[in-house]
Amino acid sequence: MSWGAELWDQFENLEKHTQWGIDILERYVKFVKERTEIELSYAKQLRNLSKKYQPKKNSKEEEEYKYTACRAFVSTLSEMNDYAGQHEVISENLTAQITADLARYVQELKQERKANFHEGRKAQQHIETCWKQLEASKRRFERDCKEADRAQQYFEKMDADINVTKADVEKARQQAQIRHQMAEDSKADYSSVLQKFNREQHDYYHTHIPSIFQKIQEMEERRIVRIGESMKTYAEVDRQVIPIIGKCLDGIVKAAEAIDQKTDSQLVIEAYKSGFEPPGDLEFEDYTQPMKRTVSDNSLSNSRGDGKPELKFGGKSKGKLWPFIKKNKLMSLLTSPRQPPPPPPASASPSAVPNGPQSPKQQKEPLSHRFNEFMASKPKIHCLRSLRRGLSLKLGATPEDFSNLPPEQRRKKLQQKVDELNKDMQKEMDQRDAITKMKDVYLKNPQMGDPASLDHKLTEVSQNIEKLRLEAQKFEAWLAEVEGRLPARRQSGLYDGGQHPPAINNCAQDRESSPDGSYTEEQSQESGVKVLATDFDDEFDDEEPLPAIGTCKALYTFEGQNEGTISVAEGETLYVIEEDKGDGWTRIRRSEDEEGYVPTSYVEVHLDKKAKGAKTYI
Image 1: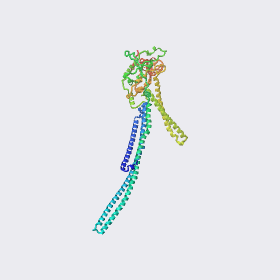
Image 2 (image 1 turned 45 degrees about the horizontal axis):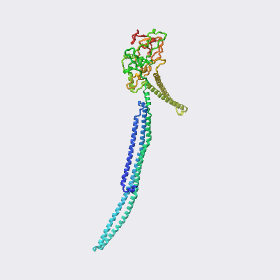
Image 3 (image 1 turned 180 degrees about the vertical axis):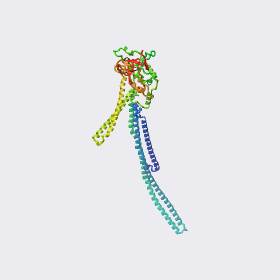
Image 4 (image 1 turned 30 degrees about the vertical axis):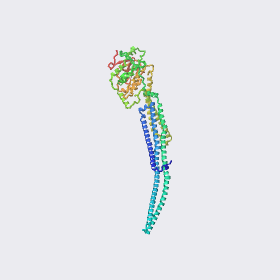
């Protein structure tokens, strides 16, 4: 099967067909090139998509990605990034192995096709020239033959005419001979040209054209093979990345299988656990007997150790009384001992002591009455500090000691900060050790450097270590304070020796949220009275201390071991700032910053009748 033998007369069609083949090849090259652009665009879009949903560093969103489902999503984004990389590999391989290679081949193919068809046209022009020569020789031979025939007829005519002279006849005979010789010469030339043309034509159709067409056929077949190989390469490029893409997909599946709902649930507990205990049951308050109604165990006047439920600030007033209560009155409520005062020493008779302790069974003034008194004593004003705190939280400001967080969360933040500081301090210490070693090397080998040049750096590193150490100690102190409270909150009491703890545990449960829904400092109050006192200190720093309403003299020595009490020595004179409210305790002051409660039976009280709020004992 040869184009030279079968298509010897289809030169023009072959020329059109080979041009069509090159166009097909160029079209395929264009297709692959557009595919590479699509792969690059797809990879870019995948990378942008993965980047768009990646958690932002140092943001709240990054903290949320500690959950297994979120970590699986991050792994998916990472695998998609690798997946996009494989599409970039496809684009690069298609460009290098197909597009660029076929582009060069198309140019070579065009040059080869042009040379082959140029050679064919040259052979075609040569045979046409030979044909024209043959035609010219043939027409000349034909013309000479006709001229010789006419000359012979004229001679015969002249020879038969008796009226023609002998000279004219001889002239006609010579002319006829000349014409006849010319015809013979033309015949010989025509025969020679014909033989030459036949040879050229034979060579053209049996040698030159078959050879040229064979080259063109081979060129076309190479083009067909090349485009087939390119298509195989096209498939292989995709096939090569399939295992890696499979690994990416396997990674996504593995990440999905690593999702653990129990772990996420535990993380939610760790993230949002406040450390507060749930409130107890409320007891029925009998308003028909206002002086005998009980106070629930959640109130601030009974201890949990008495087995009575405390009163939770219920209803819509929950968490809204705190900003309007003056510090001193609130602290008198929060720090007042909620257990019966100890009896005086046996050496003295309670009846001989003025203002002796009242019976434990005496009814206590309800907590709600105390709050009403507090509310009436000072107009309701907005808690500016709470507003400032809410605004600062909205603006992103956070207290250094994380006091705006619940206990558990505060402990975790403090522990994290301590770990970070210790890690930074270890880095600085390693740097100091390295500088010290380098200085020793310089001392032993002065040619390597000046040891004095490292003194400034060594001093700077030492200062950094000292700063970090002090900072770590500060946070460790806060952490120790928090960790010291957390176990106490979970125990039945805060005090040793069987004494009942103050029932302040659930005060923090009556917290209110800041405008943005985050915890205020009231939310971070612990069960201990000290926490509440600390939490309100800077809120009411501008409040004036309660005025003294009288004086008292200590009849006995009292060791104030419980929270809110104060130690006094026998015979000591102190100021009375709040008289006994019926619970057997009197609030006194030794100095401007030292005040607390003592049993009323331990002191002799002398009230100033002109002082505001003073009562006259009958």
